[in-house]
Amino acid sequence: MKSITLLLVGVAILAGIVAFTAPASLHADDSTAPIFVTKIPPGYRDWKLVSVAHEEGNLHSIGAVLGNDVAIKAYRDGKLPFPDGTIIAALHYSHVPSAENNKVFGQAQSFVAGSATNIQFMVKDSTKYAATGGWGFATFVDGKPAAAASMKSCFPCHNQAKATDLVFTRYAP
Amino acid sequence: MKSITLLLVGVAILAGIVAFTAPASLHADDSTAPIFVTKIPPGYRDWKLVSVAHEEGNLHSIGAVLGNDVAIKAYRDGKLPFPDGTIIAALHYSHVPSAENNKVFGQAQSFVAGSATNIQFMVKDSTKYAATGGWGFATFVDGKPAAAASMKSCFPCHNQAKATDLVFTRYAP
Image (cartoon, rainbow over all chains, first blue to last red; front, side):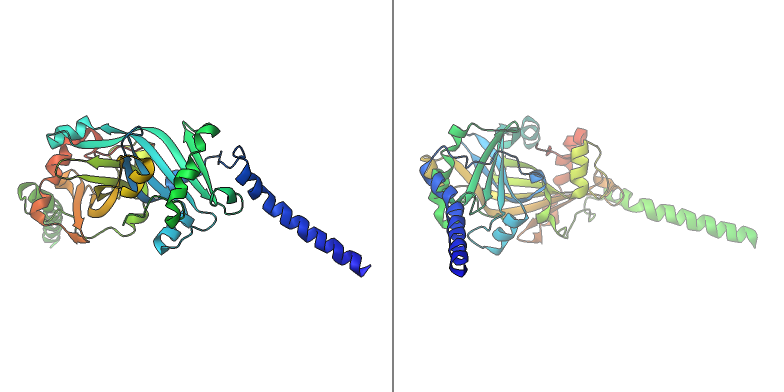
């Protein structure tokens, strides 16, 4: 009776390990697995500033990178990797000249945020997103998640920033 | 005796009115009056995002504009003029190319925040700063207030944005 109980416990433990590791293995092998974030994290517009950025080329955007409290604490403490619960938001806008500002400056030099182009998120959950470096990626355009096909490049691109836990943006003073 | 008391009260009231209005009159007539903010508002780095901006020309900067809770509420409510207690912060950084990002993108397109160039504040106090449209202006470089002479252009420049209560930056969605 005692040995049967131990056997059952052993099976249960093994089953638990298999259940725990299976999703990661599936994700690693199956590029169609749903590893993307499809819901906008609430309250992101109130988060604190990480930094700003300007992209030319096809993007032609100006953006602000914000972080939730977990993200900001990790940034300020200089701790890597980012802990589970970290969410980083990139708010992108079209990079447009400001006629009003240029008039005051007396020359064309001022660019401001035009309409929103997209909002992107990186959500750290080392279990749920184990197959993509612990990060779930998201892009929202007009509040709707971008097509899954367009999201396949997120991880391979961010994976080139391994030294900073797949995050490109540095904290601005 | 009664008339002497009344006279004294009258003089006191008059003195009060003179004392109250004198600073504003002095400011309007005397460009050397200390109308500038010389202390960094505490906690500004934790404030919420208003928008982002990029200046070329001599400035060559990328910046984030943040607002304290009074400022953010006024922006979101679309209320003008901004109420007393509003503080708007502009965090400016050098606009520098990111070699790391450009390598990943495969082309030179990415600009990020370099070192901090200055931090500017606009503080709304319609009494204290009555002579400059109700706004006190501040510029800090490396934590120290900029020379008063360099601050004389703040008000005449911002005063060209009368329709938006002297504030250039619009709230980004």
